[in-house]
Amino acid sequence: MQQILTGKKRLPGFNEEWGITKLGYLIEEIKKIKLKNPRNHELLTVKLHGKSIEKTGKKPNITKGGRPYYIRKQGELFIGRQNLHNGGIGIASEAVDGCIASSAISSFRKKIQISTSCIF
Image: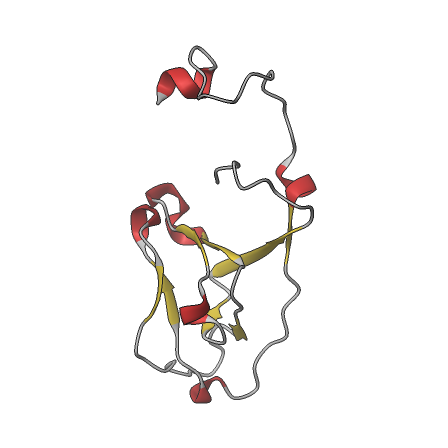
């Protein structure tokens, strides 16, 4: 893996030089609208080590002055900001479409067509 990432080895079909692209060219943060009544929605969670994004089976515990909640959609890239260093990242599947998450989970969408050979 390290040899592939450093360019010492190449996968079959990949011969071009590595290029540098700013992440902001590929994705953009989604502007969200705070839910007025999040109690009607199921929470999602971003599992550690890139394992998945899943429904929790729970509704949010609403507290005065607590974090806002937002509806999340299929295809969004989620980053659990508190656990990014532990692989708290993933792309939402159809199974979690319409679930909610707090502002502790950032969500992004692609800005350009990304090749299926790209790896996040």
